[in-house]
Image 1: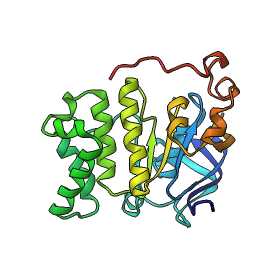
Image 2: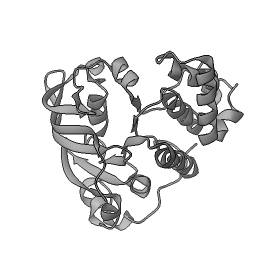
Image 3: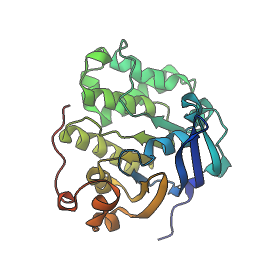
Image 4: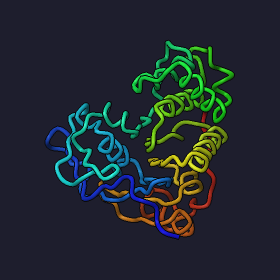
Length: 262
């Protein structure tokens, strides 16, 4: 079976904040069309910075790419505006369950379609698709987003991104602060979207257990360097991964994640 066509490619990326703080030194990897690729690493490894570089969100935090290249579908995107990337199909869900808290769940979802000048019928059809993947959002569609649970807010943030009709969905720590059953629901929905719609997904996760369970391949970052890459099955089989690169004891490598609040 031939490898998938490369959709995203990073080569030798270095990033500096405030012209002084070196966050990334040498990050490189590729994401094939239709793949789920996990970006793993302990806190401070450079996962979020890498995703912000991909989506050109660094300038908002006084960060800049000082070396390397980022290609999306063969075109250099390191200097393209984030809004333009969204229109091209590269859409990121930021860490922290970002919602318009004063709007209802459905109003939040609809905002995701506004940037592509969608018709009323297209919006209605896309809403139904989002609700099919996240039934809890349909139940809460008229509820103010700020009054929903953390898991429902994360689903809303992902659903809003899906309303943009992405070809590459970039997610930063979607499991953070959520109960294991909620995390399972979210990753199951993402896996279904990947399988049924061919959606390419790049997900940064500190929860390596859940990420490696659902991803096709994974890249491990350490101190701003990409240090390891392989199939999810290969990395799952290595008991040293968590101990060496993810800041966890080797004795916990096979243990389940502690329960977290929804």
